[in-house]
Amino acid sequence: NNTSNAGGGMYADYSSTTLKNIEITHNQAFGIQGGGLRINNSNGLHLMGVEIKSNTCNGEGAGVWVSGPTSFDNVKILSNIGAEAIYTYSSGTGIDFDNVTIASNTGPGVRVHCCSSESNFKDTRIKIIEKNKERAEEIAGELSSSIVINGDGLDEEILKEANIEESETVL
Image (cartoon, rainbow, N blue to C red; front, top):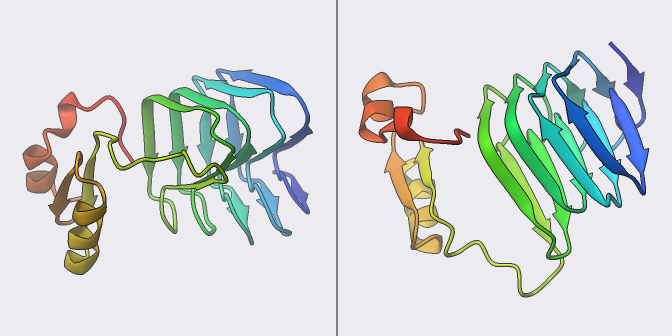
């Protein structure tokens, strides 16, 4: 229940940060970045068994804003309010998701800003459920290695079609 200009729950610069088995909830960044967490120029952010829920940000990264290598392991990012649930700024460094749920946030789930011209997500193998038909077609055209299903991600029949119970990470 904290409020700040950036990093409502936690703000760190130039650090290697590991957070395990904690909840980051009901924080607010009234400024630019990171309702729950803002980790800047990170040497590595590792989230393990973390729930980031019900945070608010007027700018980027309602749940998490991070620059630098990042790994999410057994993480839930839920019901955050802002431009996107996770904003990550990467200069070609790694972003790893393992057993991650990103749901019921306002805006898109993850926004990745890469400043390296070599960064490329076109060959990433993921399943995407998109409600807007035109947007689903656009995404399918951009991500040739991915499966895009047009439908409501809360519809049980669509989730069965996507074989969601076998998925390791859900956005």
